[in-house]
Length: 362
Image (cartoon, rainbow, N blue to C red; front, side, top):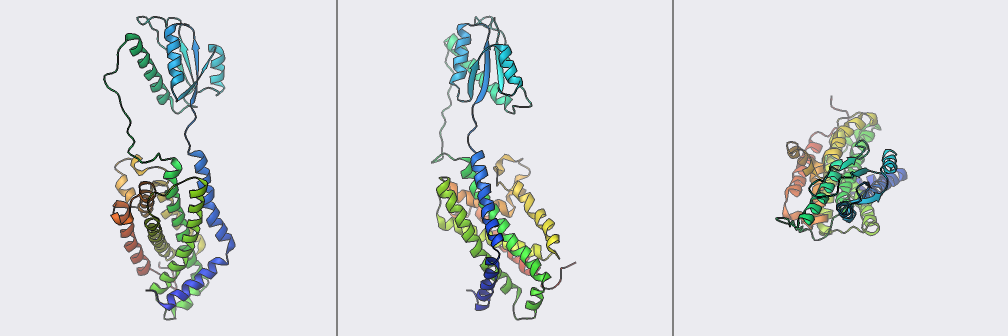
């Protein structure tokens, strides 16, 4: 399958990488720090701390306060209005409800006043809707009426999904893109600057041999680093991989191949290390923002979703997420896996077609 020349070059490039211990440590610990930071920030939100100043002392007001306390969304703190207002202004409360004195009978209920600092609390609408729901519940109870229908939540997932479960496959795809492009694009520029490629050009080595050898070396490096990160995430963060490891690693291998080839293409455009950095940033940064690494693509405007789904990082992240979280098989040829296969062909063609040995194309 691989020639002896390609295997020999792959061993040489592997030795070159292993000599750079700083690069090994940075490429390994950076994604671990990323995962650790988001695992602590991706939990459920604490309840809103709401103050209630009851000036009516009526049974209806008591029922309303009990209804609020029964809401998991709120933690209720009762007290005098002036004291609670001071706490709201100081930022200790996220909202303050004033129950007026005429909040006594059903026929003459006064309006509840809801005080909030909108600049400090972004979820004002959520709090207000929960309060309205509590008022409706109390009104039905007093009028002795029942709702026309109820909503029963049916979870179609086999297990609840945390944010870290959603995030991990995207971060692994992000890690693959960074390691691969850094391992091909930056190295090609450095080899060209040092005259290594120029000397290889006069040998029987073809661009395909050079590309395949670096792909083999970097593939092994990425697989080892990704396996370390994945193992730590599985054991330390209690994350489960629902799909098969074979499908997962097949997607990883193809994704690594895609971004290695993209790195070769980018390396053929730049003359120096300083020159390739903005080129790589122009290609990778929009994908990090748009490719669903940190939030679902479905939350974006509909007119931009077809463009986003066509990005290579989107295809890889979605394929890894489907396999890890939904138990999908890579051979099911879903849209993400189909996108990965298409990008394998595109990336290899571009890398071999426009690869530059000696001089950067002008």
